[in-house]
Image 1 (cartoon, helix red, strand yellow):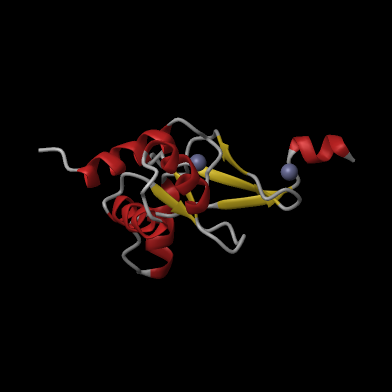
Image 2 (cartoon, protein in one colour; image 1 turned 135 degrees about the vertical axis):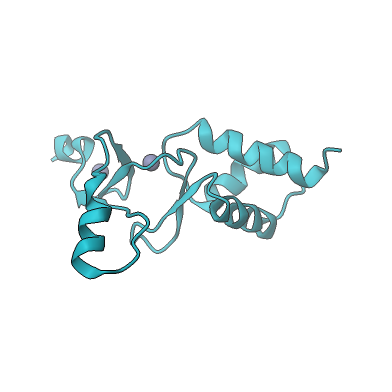
Length: 128
Ligand SMILES: [Zn+2]
Ligand SMILES: [Zn+2]
């Protein structure tokens, strides 16, 4: 049986996978409300939390004050623009050796890593 609850979750995943703008919960909430006018922001947060927990999506803390979400759960790196705050995907292969290198250096049971680069994006650069 498909509950209304899981329908909202499905829709949320679909929205996330259809964009590469790494949206915030507020943005997703606005989008989801077009399909489910009665959905609450708390529900969106709860769904996002659960999806992040089970690894279906990833949450990015870009230091912008609120969490951004990404429907691409494959490991990849991000670039955040210091001017406009946009988060971009960086299309390079992840450094697979980094985990084992750090494991060897620290003795900590490292299971993965994330990397965030920052600077000025192309479109902000061209505006100057
Ligand atoms: Zn920018
Ligand atoms: Zn991404």
